[in-house]
Image 1 (cartoon, one colour):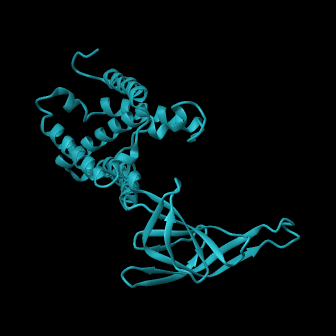
Image 2 (image 1 turned 90 degrees about the horizontal axis):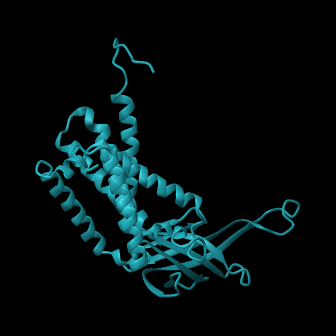
Image 3 (image 1 turned 135 degrees about the vertical axis):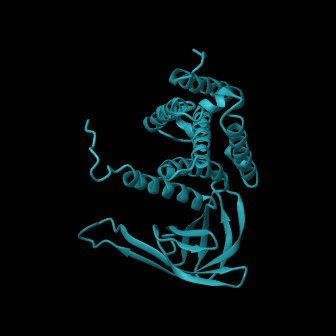
Length: 302
């Protein structure tokens, strides 16, 4: 099977080997600890990944496997393995408690992580190959491959820097302390001051249980730099301040109008994820433009 030239069989064999290796790592080390990749470790990992891609490309003439990795015979099996594990994740309830061992925590499942890392590496290598052989008609492929690479790398490595905290504010009392899901205290670089809490309920004839239709908070956010931002915070309409998004999360119904609970979120890698997604969309549009049949040219039909 390993005789040259390598074809799809070798690609599927490599994917299967990564799954087996992942199972061994899962058994020996336990689930992937993404928290270990928090800044600046994730930046170092990203830099090492880029260096590995450049070195692999530079050695492609000397190492057959490196050259093979830039062809469809490597890409298709990698995508197929990633798709298969993604389907497993979609068919399995993902939960931190209970569920099917290993399969219910796919994002920390070593086989899943290794297969996706393999696919990302191939996408990055393919992107570099298209860039180094740049031609106008290569633009859709560069945008698609590079977009996938940027979105997946940023979303994966940036996950460790994602912060989701809960802040409880009393009326007219600036609050700068928030709690994470583990109950640990976080001192923020800003404070949230609640001015008023707004709640609208459904009419009694519509909902006899007096269910809230809308609840929101009129707040001021005071930064350490002396800036004050005022706005209304709702469930799906956050207030953005210094890289943080402040969402209305809940309220204390035992003290109506006096206490509001907010979820504050910071994801510094999210703009890169969006950039990757927009590049993929742009690549799809470019495919339609570049691949459109030329006027007067006979179009092949299937």
